[in-house]
Image (cartoon, rainbow, N blue to C red; front, side):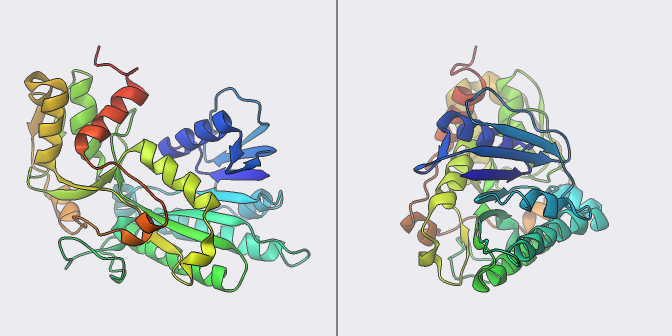
Length: 327
């Protein structure tokens, strides 16, 4: 089978690429070709699977058609600019996050005009599609109520995915990712970046700035869990989804204070002391409208699994990024 990852140079994209190259298959089907696309050339490790890495801007005219022309059987659509950047640059957010998604769906539809073609399309959405007023724990039936440009772009993407799936152009499934922590590498422009920073930097012996109150409660999962969500979504029997093609992924509801206490348990008071509280009213305003927790029964019943404690999330980061130890 042919697999395409759009947004392969991002953190989750790189980890998904590594998992696919390691396994050499999706479910029970061997991968005959793995195509990686992003605005910068994606990097990848060794493996026996043929890899084609390309530099592509999905929002550019004709880019989606060229990718889809190879008729991949499974498409992972991870490409997006993050929440803080989408809020700061309105035009860029809609061009990348909405127009790129629409171009992809249209390219798939037009590709099927000459010969039947209906790939599995796994679309990464976000819990930012929900905005206050919200219950403490949001049920599966709660309507989309985004309060940011990023959340609005993802919500529109979910609606398009459902409609193109209903019409038989794609076999789509949208997965609303929790905030993914602990993200390795350098901070990005996401408003949620501090959730990772207050763990990642102290573990590396560096100072981290906390821009919000320790009472802020949010929904989390690890990069390891995110990859498992994507792989499971690629093989799931979508007939069980009906017309509701997007799912809120399982996760862990925790406060920033819970994060810090987990860090203290895992790495001691010395690590926790690297966190410096410096309130940021812009980030605080954005985060105040975000969901705090979910009841993700639908996804859990379909076999999606995430961590159940913040200690597990930190342990996954230590194992996957720090060689399994703290030095």
